[in-house]
Image (cartoon, rainbow, N blue to C red):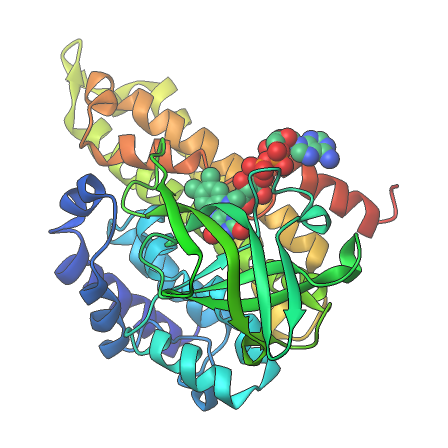
Amino acid sequence: MTDDRAALQHTAAEFVRREVTPHLDDWEAAGEVPRELHAKAARQGLLGVSFPEAVGGEGGDLLDSVAVQEGFLEAGASSGLLAALFTGGIALPHIAATGNQDLIDRFVRPTLAGELIGSLAVTEPGGGSDVAAIRTTARRDGDHYVVNGSKTFITSGVRADFVTTAVRTGGPGHDGISLLVVEKGTPGFTVDRSLAKMGWHCSDTAELGFADSPVPVANLVGEEDSGFAQIAEQFVVERIALAVHAHGIAARSLELAAAYCRERETFGRPLVKNQVVRHTLVEMRRQVEVARTYTRAVAARHVAGESVIAEACLAKQTATDCATYVCDKAVQLHGGTGYLTGTEVERHYRDARILPIGGGASAVLADLTARLMGYA
Ligand SMILES: Cc1cc2nc3c(=O)[nH]c(=O)nc-3n(C[C@H](O)[C@H](O)[C@H](O)COP(=O)(O)OP(=O)(O)OC[C@H]3O[C@@H](n4cnc5c(N)ncnc54)[C@H](O)[C@@H]3O)c2cc1C
């Protein structure tokens, strides 16, 4: 943590106290965050952190975006809000990495300026864990691809102006997958459903359909059939980000629980006077410290240029286990109040449940780690 990063984290937390927490309950009820928030976050210099200035970003690296996310969560933002506001973090990196100036100008710059919203669509109704098995097809026809298929569980997909979409351009398996940017308004491209969820309520989630949708070849991201490698490369950052969501909501839940336990009295004395309560708080703290320290260390190794595919999986597992434990205990220590809709720990408890599923389910990441570490 440098002084600059601490200042960035502080700016993010102040932004949330001013622009987010007064409205978050309304956005949770509405099922989405307003577009205006993207523009405000961009003006504050938060939306483009870790993207190079050459593509319209603010510069900085992954550790800077970790600081921004930690700042958001410490100030009471939700994991769902981060998912909705920073969907560009998963929709844009593949495009930015190609250096394709046309795609950068049309999609990356306006999204980082808060003018457009983009999504990443990999998962299909037939399955999400096995990315190599995707069935949505893109058949080349002159200067267009004709896309057919469907995608589901797509974050910000209801609001998205464009979707970085994994499609099959070649044969079966890893080698036949490409990334295509599909724009809103493309014939045959539809938002078929807005999906209601257990948590992440302010993050809209869509099922998308493609029926003979013509997409210009100019919207191909990188080389044809190189999509799987591009997706796999960017998964590292997504998994570290989800680990930050996890230890961030755990840290916030712990803080709220500790305050409640100091204030709430049972049997004539504050809850915190009971040893079992104090020990629970300490165990929650231990898990938060371990998850945060390890996740930051893995992020730092990534920034230093090391390959941390396995370590990113371990960080996500460590942090999501931490969130599962800590958010549950925070609800328990709040008693009946913790079960009430609108209590902040209740929201974090629900939001925590997606984290071991999204961005790679725990069992799938454990398998990947076993292979990378030579155990299988
Ligand atoms: C709220 C939300 C937002 C999402 N946002 C996006 C998005 O923006 N873009 C996107 O492309 N996707 C998104 N996803 C999809 C997400 O990445 C997938 O849900 C996830 O990868 C799991 O895929 P699946 O749901 O199809 O589960 P499946 O692949 O059907 O697996 C089901 C379960 O089986 C187990 N399992 C699977 N394979 C194995 C195995 N080999 N060994 C042991 N156990 C196994 C795991 O426990 C897994 O959870 C989102 C999902 C949700 C719920």
